[in-house]
Image (tube, rainbow, N blue to C red):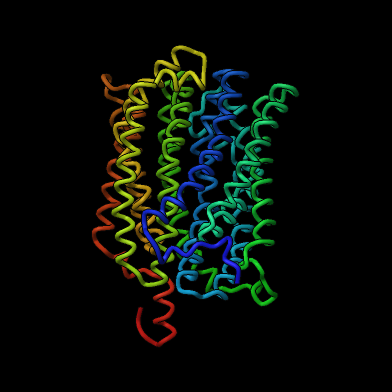
Length: 460
């Protein structure tokens, strides 16, 4: 069997494997964030701050609607990585085939629900009246293309579970270039406004998904499926759901907390909305190295849990902490000394620039905690510790809802409560994640190990 597009992470130097896996993912995540960055720059500079605020008002709600599909994609990837680590090739192929059914159903349902209730939910979030129509238009178009986004995330999760982080990168680069061209065409040439930038994002994601799928069918040996692999396999589907739904609930709860925080932001007016949108884009970029390392840790943990190499998982985690420390310090310096320059990339209005520059100085002090969330979450999710996902979601909701409502009513803090809430939520979530790791319950959560014990007639 050819292994050109497969990486076994159960052998070899842990740091080298994590970095080699993370780098293509980092580039891919940065290019994926370019979808949002380009949208923000085109909308903010060529349509106006009101339009940028309209896009920003949908961010947390978009994340909420995507959370179910994203969580199930992560669950699929974890199941496949553990089967791969255990050398169960037939189960890997069956899981790939059954992932299509899981993602198709979830993507269609969430797309319909979001399109129908978009305006009602935005109104409930106290979205300013002057940006409500644009926010609704943007949200419905993006939600209408949710199946494309879900498909890309699913195929990327599968390829990464098999150790291939390069193929998703290739097609994201291609689709990013298409996104830039479509943005310029739809907004600057054709005057489609905010609807044009939403359409550009959806079309680009669809191209990335289609390209990955075709390439994997041709090149990856695990995608050489036979008729028997295509049968509905409920045990495998239930395994994906067992991990995916708690992760989806975790993401949904995080999204709900972001929706609650967005409601607080909306109460401070359009300038705060625009500044929060711009700083959120900056934070999304800062998160990408952490996100990439966390995803690498999830694949690393999944494959090694399947191979029953617990000490190797621990070594990889401890070395990841050092990587997080180095990057978070570098990002802190950039935010503290380059805030105004960063904000000028997004908007021209001086009040928005001034507010945003001070805001990222607040959140940058907690970047190390943010990194710890990602790598610990990657390990615990990759090991199959589904209950951790629930804990993580509850902590983020408590942090964002609690801190925002308390700090916002203190006159001396006021609008700064938005960014103080973000940073403090990272700190308590990181603490909860590390405590869960230290408890060691993740060590007995392997799906493959439990399955093997059950087949032998023993208790897992």
